[in-house]
Image 1: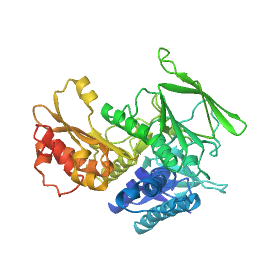
Image 2: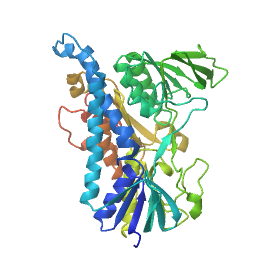
Image 3: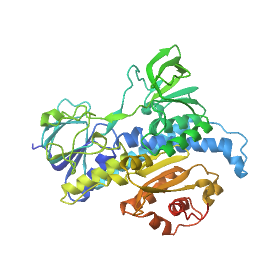
Image 4: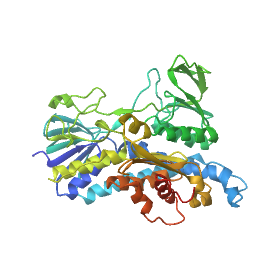
Length: 473
């Protein structure tokens, strides 16, 4: 019996892998996708983006019922938390979406192979499924590696996903912690920290940097820090965790100052749950890359050229295993681009127009250059800002925290960066991304008619403010 042969075999069924597989099949290629999980969707759909957003939405509604509905004249006599029902809703959403990817695979005649894939040659993938004694062999003209990333460990901390947890465990806690300590004030730590804080936990965030969101425009990090502090989250900045140990029913963390000239007020923290959220690293374990001569770079990533090719021309890589931000939508764009390239088209990704979003409340969204980056590069720029407190729709909804900030080239007026903190920032940033994709000037955004009253008008007003012509300031 001959072994299966395909135009492309994709290793990894996350956002990058499944997007590549579906697009390649739509373009007429024969495709197989290898995924070690029982369900498709990768970290994002199973234990990342989607379940966390479900919990964020539920926790926001719980807090709103507790504290904000009365402002609208809606009086609720008593509010209680049914954590089991909240978690069941999350599971249902995840199940529906992962099942949706399965449906799309069947619709597009993609062969879904369950098991752990590894390279045994430039055109051959070996897949060992659970309970199988003999691996299945797949042959392909091209191979795409889209295996994503995994949680970066914290030395000295042993994860049990019950009391010392990663994001996976934090999405499935069986009760609200009395005190949750989040190690790492990045996207994941802040989102999950706010979930459990809204549900009743005391939350302390320990962050290595002196500021939140150091990779974003500094105004966003400062504004988010201020708002989350006001909400009740506590922060220990410029600190590193040197030890995590259990002491009876408690967990004790030993802290040390990153800068010895700025000693910490406290060197120990006690809690009942600690969330380790110090970042993610490329997942390449078990791929046998050395078999085909692929070596990782100094950060554990797979080097690729501008067409996503590795040193083996017919083996490609995308997503979290290559350079660039570890974002699901970035991986999707790369997956689609590779599929187009394999089909003889000219796929590409504009990395200057990849947005980043943090789904705290208020949300934070950013695309393009920051002020700090423009200053370092010696690029002259103009700034336009507009607060949501002056936006009619924000006033009507009672969500007035934050602002829109637009950076434009001082001579050409081309939009170089847009940074938003405020209600639905993750949705509003799409207008800026579209504008930047087509090299818009701030005047183009300002002259575009926006419906009234909408939050989008804050983008228009910030664009007008670039030239000092904001109408409502």
